Length: 441
Image 1 (cartoon, rainbow, N blue to C red):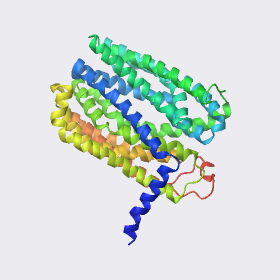
Image 2: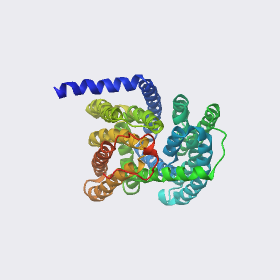
Image 3: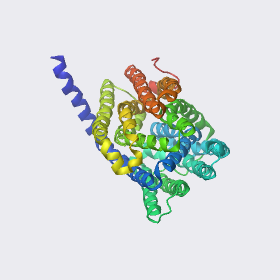
Image 4: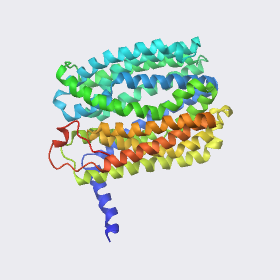
């Protein structure tokens, strides 16, 4: 009898939660924008892959992988920190934005300088690729500033936040198609689109922030400390998470032919297709949890349903995709990418794990537990490094998807253990009083 009543109870909790604060509508809208952004990026990727071939596609994958690492280092974890504090302390929202921007200009400049100096080494002396690295690292400073405004919008106005996020990939896709039609789609021409589209996105984000009272603001030393503390915890989580997500491509960029990396990058891109839909759950839940003063038993039930829902969405998209990949990949990208198919098959279960852990990580951040995400991702990163060192010499490029799949599973298991053991908060705002308190996994 207890089992027969459990499902209706959970369904009732979910239904009530979705209706009362319009969370369901917000998730659906965010998922739509995520899908539009992913579609634009995907179309641009298809155009690039068909136009330049596996070798140049591999060089582009290497540059963007290192660019992503630079964004994480220079970003100081401020995307999550700003979203949390603007939601939790809205009266000081504009000052949080100004303070975070000032912090990131300093550290972002250091990361930018390091990237520019490392470019020739990463490119193995290839002058064209070296220029590509420098273009990408030059665009990073715009991303550092832009995250101040974009992340704050997530907590204040989800509609504007969604629009701002989709601007850059849409503009980039349109420009890439234009370059392709003009027959001037080259590696560095594509990379030039990064700073141009990011600048336009930054301008629009600032305009939106002024419209909702998040700009202008005044940088305040007293606000730098909580932002830095939360950001440091976020970096502690993002660093190993980046190892899990990017280390394979970072290492492959230095030890395998660019064509092999190009095929692997296509497999990774296809495996990540459902994540924008799944991400919408965490995108909405994170600021909602950050704004709450109490976490009830019903919240715990909704958290479980959110994680299960993320896995179900990913599986529903990836299993059919894997089934038709043998025919679809060469048809869409060209016969040179046939080798991406078995790599996609290996990545499929790992991406389902990744989807669930993405939701679980956002739930933990919303509960002000970013260090638990860091602990989970750090454990998974150890598996990633060990497996890559062991498997790459034995099975070559196939070692990368095997290592990623296992590491994603480890991260998910660790985060679920942390999430389920968080206590129900019955003490008002006590959960937010101690930033260092954590549940030992």
